[in-house]
Image 1 (spheres, helix red, strand yellow):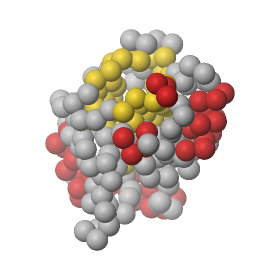
Image 2 (image 1 turned 60 degrees about the vertical axis):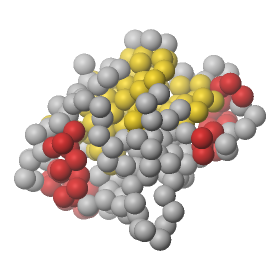
Image 3 (image 1 turned 30 degrees about the vertical axis):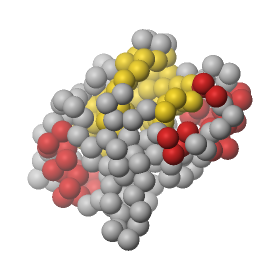
Length: 213
């Protein structure tokens, strides 16, 4: 399994000839979708989902399939059976790559701000993208994609989340709201300079690849 980090919350996963893109939002270069077999969208916020861009990708790649929640699917009318609505407890297969769905709600930003639905995706039982929530995967995973900065999060919660999820490695995503200095600070606290999470911490730059084994 190979991971390519794209802007913000987006990653591209390649395994055995299958390419899956997760959360190609407004801070992600559209090239992330080129040649993808499938797109997984965790929720409707613009930093994770851009309707026009996804429609353009679907038009350019007739075989592209999309799995997401009902709110996002409702904005993709006209794509028919190419869009599949999934939720907590569902499982499906993308060309032999198994995917299961976990979680229901976006993290609370403020009690006065309505919550939206949010689902996380577990790929091949070993890589978990939680979207915008600190949803625990159903078992310890090899790779946890960790949203390191958001209006709803703080570092202490992230440290405890990684400890409880118990992955082998945590890979930083969702960093666009941080300055370069902020990314360094978060990286230090979540990595070797912090109190420890029990996981290796990786902070890849956009375009950087990680071979996950």
